Length: 372
Image 1 (cartoon, rainbow, N blue to C red):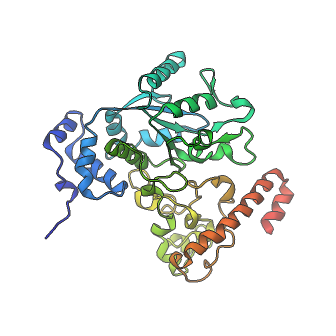
Image 2: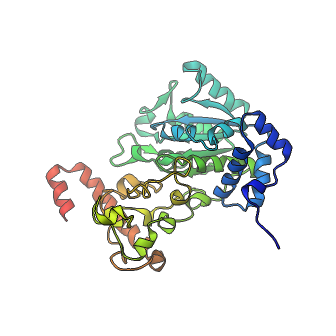
Image 3: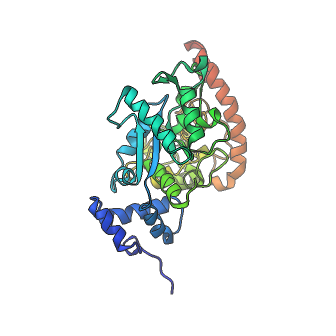
């Protein structure tokens, strides 16, 4: 009878395990890392040895740049541990440029970036954090005397692949929210047709970034994506599909206000503004901080940060989704199905327009719209 491998039984070559032990990574942590990464990529456990082997190949040159960002994605990745995803990945990639962690500064840093781009032209992976402002000729973000528009365009066109981390690089994020005074855009809008993959989230989940890099190392290409350029292994299902509060939704049990009995008992947060039914992300299964928790598990509704223009279309964050059919009766999301997405897409569009106008109105007008 065929049996499945457990993480401790995965057949990773002894020589590989010894190499990682010499680098200060225990066998247990390395096996756990390879197993978790394989699972994150939605691959069968038989691929674990292949993932481990990919980690032994030549170091992948990586250039990490930031534009209109808060560095939250860099911080999220660098603080990953148990196993130390950041440490392991930094052993298998050659990080040629990263403003957050590199020792060099000023002209020396920019020279290192330019040299890396020329030396590894067509071979390096570019990681972009933050939106790119195109307004007024790109004057709102310059690095080393060059606009983000010029710098990012050149780097993307010379890269083997570009990974956009966070919602700002993927879709414009908060910088592109109405009225978007800097003309902020995403990388894929700046350089159409380039090999770009989006890892939206605020911030990106470090495990999804790790899995994407390892996928590129293992297969020599980026993973399959949805129509928005997001990897299907991480954004293939709605948050609502795997939410631990889903059973309460099915039973029609909702928290009405923060702190009430329903909220304390873990009931569905839809009425408190949760955008999980319209957000695609693997937050419920991967979670954050090494699988410790995620917003809904902690009692706060999803704000839809992995969706395009979430700041406009998903706000107000503490009001329920507009005109979603079936949510006031006992009914599962599967029964709502495609009808839910179609109905709310139109509602979101109108709701987003209303949100944009609200931001330009005075407080009295805001109050009237909110009451309506």
